[in-house]
Length: 269
Image: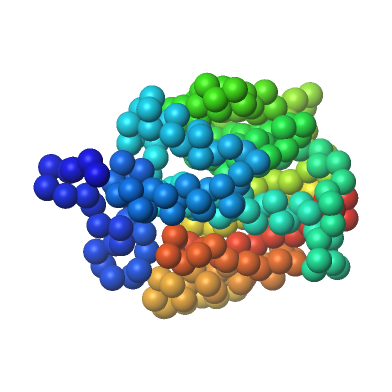
């Protein structure tokens, strides 16, 4: 185990006692048994993407910089739900093999890992990731996939405000009805804007809201709730106003912002 300046690895859980993983834990922080557990989880959760090898490549190239466990698990769990979303019909809980998925649009993507994992799983499906800034971690992940012989040639990054990018006349970033729009932990108005974008093109969508203004419940004049209850209420307001047909959850040990809202179009499964 690599030691920190305090003389030991960072604790796995947050100090406030909420049971959530600490954002400071990296792959290098894990002892041999926990590393083995992590790689078994990765093989079971996203084996087709070869992400276990990508993670080892990232560690070899960059040390701990891009291997934060909380960030990794959030993305893998979101990727697993996206896979389930595109392989089921709205009226069929058993799931069906996916028909042609026309595109993946990861908006306000941040590090973009969840979208990259889906692109690795579906190498024939184009991925467009967009955000105000292109992060170094996004490029580091792309380079790692290339280094292990699995280049993501279907992945493309577009810099800018996605609410403007997709409305430019003649722009390449078109959303077909059999596409999937995702927004993982987009802040403020990003989740609602992503759903509006998808619905405007008849596409499927999945959002995991993060910071949410009271405007998500516009008819409520006073909102005095603890943070957890407020988050759940505003997610419910978004689900109702935008007709979400699916409400799931990421593991609460991974993130306190865990509510997943989604809807499929009939051409997504």
